Every structure is written in structure tokens, then in C-alpha cells.
Image 1 (spheres, one colour):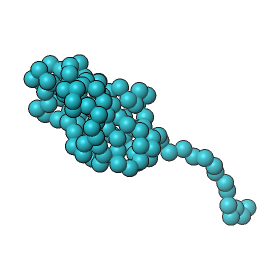
Image 2 (cartoon, one colour):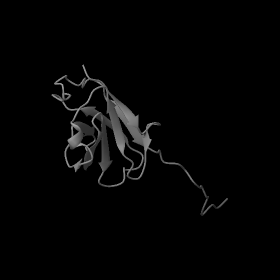
Image 3 (cartoon, helix red, strand yellow):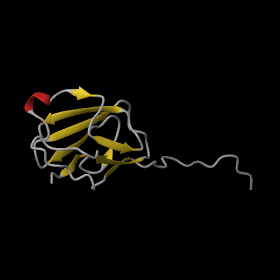
Length: 116
């Protein structure tokens, strides 16, 4: 069974239009299929995220969102069922990968209209 692992974001946090990347334990596409950005890909996101997928190498997939990642959000992603390597080995789709955007921070607090 082919395994996938999340390689970016390494710290589990994305911002702006950071890419999310996975590496597989087997070749997933031929060399000729690498380097092309496509509107569809073999991973599903929850919540859904519009973007593009690109096989950077035969064993490495990247996803770039169409817009900045929404602030203070968590995401789950997993390989679609039926995904197989070039050797027809199935990809383990039981693992769910998680990542997030930065939490909101209080930058300043100021008291206004105080009457003792």
C-alpha cells in the first residue's frame, strides 16, 4: 500500500497563498505529467478550498489555493478513494492530514468612555 505524508506546511500552519505538499512512497505519475497546474487533483479538502494541483515530481504533489487561506481556520485533507500509483498500488486513504492558519491575536486593548 502506498503511503502519503504531508511535507508542507512543515509546522502545520499556512498563510497567504502558501502551498500544501504531499510526498508519496511510490511514483504516482510519469515524469511527463509533472510541472502542470490543474484545476482538479487527487485530494479532497474540508472545508472545500478552490485551487490548483501540480505534480512537482513523480512522487510529490502540491496544492495552491486560488485565494489567500482564510484566517483563523483549520483544514482537513485526504487522498481520494481509488488513487493508485503508476504500478497500480492503492494509496492508503485512511490518513487525514490537518493544518491551519494562524489564530487571531489581540494586538491592543484600550478603555474608552469610562466614567467613575
